[in-house]
Image (tube, rainbow, N blue to C red; front, top):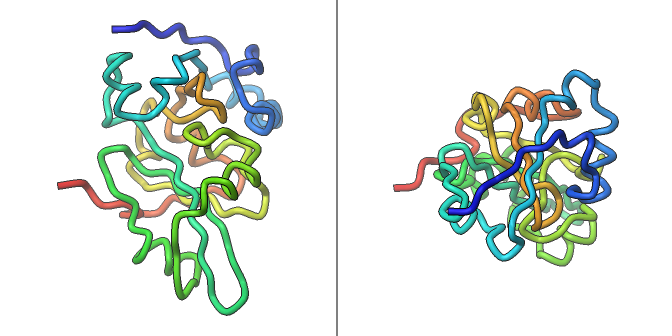
Length: 180
C-alpha cells in the first residue's frame, strides 16, 4: 500500500490545476486552511484504483461528474458530486434540476476544455461560474471527503461542509442512489 502525505492546499498550488488553486485562494482563509492535498500516482487517480492503492475508503471518495442538460436550443452544465458508492441520478433528479428535456454526461473534451482541469481530476473547486454545483447530501455530511485536485497527480481532502459552502453549491437529497 502506498502512503499519502497530507499538505496544506494553500501552500501547494503545484499540486492543483490553476482554476482549483485560484478557487482555494479566493476562499476565506479559515475555510481554505481546512483543505489538504496529497500527491498521488496519476496512473492510480481513478477512484477504485486510488482507494485500493492508498488504503482509502470508497465511502468517503466523491466523484465529480459533469452533466449537460438541454431544452430547445439551450444547454446548461452542472458539476455533480456524488459518493463513489452511489450512482448519480442523471435522468431523474439532475435532469429536473437542470430543467432539461435531456441530460447526459458532458463529452470528455468539453468538460476538460471548459473546466481547465484534467479528465479524472475534475473537482467542484474552480468550476466555471456558469456551471451549477450540485452536491449529494451524503457528500456534504462527510467529516472528511476525498475529491480530485484538478489534476490526476493529486487528491484533495476536506470536510463535506467546506464543499457545501462553496459559492453556488446546492446540497440535494438523493442526487445519487446507492449502488446495489
